[in-house]
Length: 231
Image 1 (cartoon, rainbow, N blue to C red):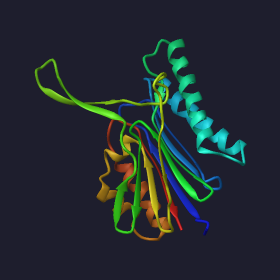
Image 2 (cartoon, one colour; image 1 turned 90 degrees about the vertical axis):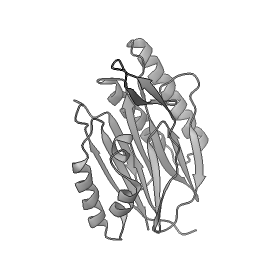
Image 3 (tube, rainbow, N blue to C red; image 1 turned 30 degrees about the vertical axis):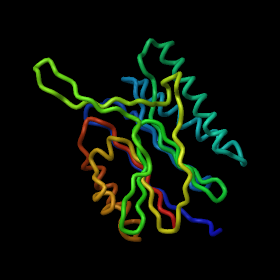
Image 4 (cartoon, rainbow, N blue to C red; image 1 turned 135 degrees about the vertical axis):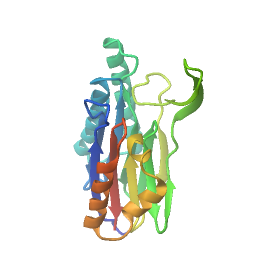
């Protein structure tokens, strides 16, 4: 099988209402591992959660030459338990993080995700979302009597009991572009915009487009992305 080369661009921007960026990301082109995490748990704890997760994933892949999806899932379960204990020790309702991760093991690629961070695939002239959000959407009546739309995560790393990881096995091909991103990024970026940002073969132009787009993202949530281009 032809070995795919890859190029990676990443970016992150703190939300307007935040004093600390609670997103984290990891990329290692040599090991073929990429992930994005969106922490939650209020001031400090969200950043702790996403950073702890990213460091655990990095340690697993950097420390071993022979890796497996099963062992990686075990690492995520350990992180889930550690974050859950951290929340109890600090009397915080939730110390958790979302995760979307891609790794290439031998000839196959695996997508692992928890929560509502997403992975998009840009192939030829189409954009596909390869993950499904782990969240519930419902309507809530406010004190003024109006109805507002509320979203609540149903899964997160750090939730404790009942934790599990969604896994999808796939193959990427030459010229595929995959975008891992947090909700702060995709809520401000339509699929058509994703296609426009990634079109063409000039890597510098693509990077400049993403840098420019990220600078215009203006919302209260942190926004982060990792773009991987296979060639």
